[in-house]
Amino acid sequence: MTTRTLHVISSTNQLLTDLLSLALNANPDNTWQTQVIFDDDAAPQIGTALFTSVSGKTYRIELTGTCITCAIRVAMITFVDSLNTPETFLFLPAGIELAHLCPGLHNDLAERHIILGAVMHSIEATNAPAELLTHIPLSDHGSNLTPDDERCLAEIHALNLGYADLILLTGDHDSAGGELVEHLRAHDTLLANPFEDNILAIARSLVHRPEDALERIHPATIQAWGGPDGHGTWTLDLTSQRAFHPDRLFDFAEQLGEYGVCARGCFWLASRPTTICSWDALGGSVAISSAGSWDTPADAQTHIVIVGIGDNTTRDAISRAFSQALATDEDMLFAEADDGLDQWLGTNVIEG
Image 1 (cartoon, rainbow, N blue to C red):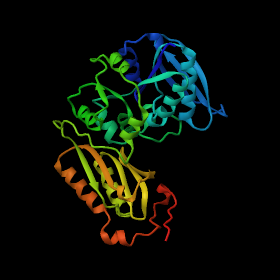
Image 2: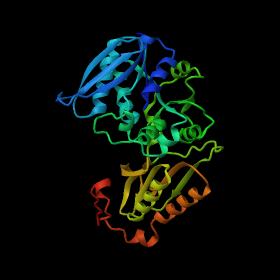
Image 3: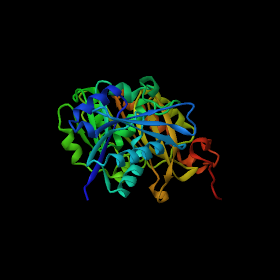
Image 4: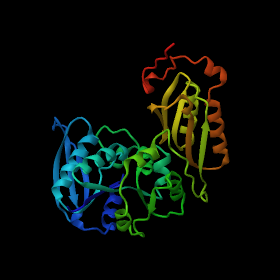
């Protein structure tokens, strides 16, 4: 049986996607871009997935259901099956989150004896500071996955940089943007300049392992990677066995939004001792949610990894704000089930 492999690349920049399609130097008939076309009158369809090869071939598949990522994954499987070629490089629709797409895609492909090879994300060094540290709506760049997509570039970049097996960084790697990407890159994630390195050979050396990628980005297992600091880039690794105070955590969130940083990790609350609470401060706003349960109460911790650009003043202020957001012994002793966070973390019940 002939081995078949699918490599996927995410991007938020159409021009960069076009350039990378050529830089891959793969067979033009095996290199494709994916675009999602929406039609308000197409119910019950979500829209149409349009696959276009570098050589100009096109392939259309209707998207149905209520989950856009699920519908795209199903369309991709149908599309790859139709090609019957040993190797395919597929650029994903702008705005796709790799962590939501690739684990299911990996399993669906395996059932058809197709390997999910390299999972890649592309970003440009010059634009990286603005796109990672400020709030730029996807819709402003025409990169929204759906017509009502309100996410920003920082959300997509931060998550996809963390999940990808290979980061394609264009522009000057020895720059503030290059440093920033280095600080967000896991040690087992490869980094290449697609216009200088042989990314075709690098991609072919990789086989995607969803469990490893998910561990890199899970709030409870995220790590501080660090990197060069010649352009003022820094990483703060803030850890405590104490819980966050349910009110003061909002003060900490507000300060992070003002400083313009990437901050991801986990925390816990005395009112919810078994819940892993996720923390995502991206693009000037903070999102918290439930990310499962701690294996044992002793595993509960508050761990936030913060990456930014600036001087010691900013880092010191953030460290102080983190300490002030932690619960005191008295706070822990008198924690109440009604912590005011049900809308983000779900209804809380403490059994007496």
